Length: 224
Image (cartoon, rainbow, N blue to C red; front, side, top):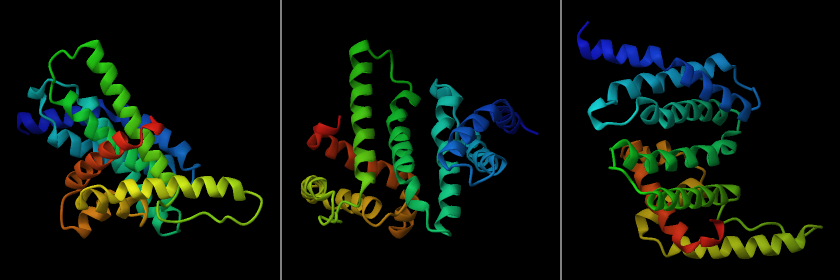
């Protein structure tokens, strides 16, 4: 075994607890409908892929690099299973938020030198605002109006007004950014499914989604 393969093996062996921790968090999220061992197996696939791609010369910790990839691998696996029983939409917010956080962690992974406290606070603020945007978009299909009949009519009117406003902001995005937002938050596609539709990589779709969320974040400051 060469030194590179040995190093990857050590990374995997040394971070199985991280896989178990993330699997445990998602196990609670999916209400234990999938066995914990199965989630761990999914996460281990993400861990192995992370070990293959990790470059220690970048100067960041492996656990930082691997976290969102492990979580993404588990969420992808859960979505594939849940799609078969019609419950995949429940994972959308977790998936998109995880993808957004992974993109936002890249500057840290690339070893951005000694950011100031003000820069760290600004980075945290913009990231939280972006996450809020992801979760708000995931809460309802952006082009679907609520039922205004019944006892929640007033709330439905308010919700429709807000959704219509968000939809208008999406229409102002550049076409490729609007396309990814509508595919994910209206059609219910995962970023992986959207990437396959466009014959692109999932990382390409994640970058595009992050750009779209950042643009909407500037326009929808009320969710920050």
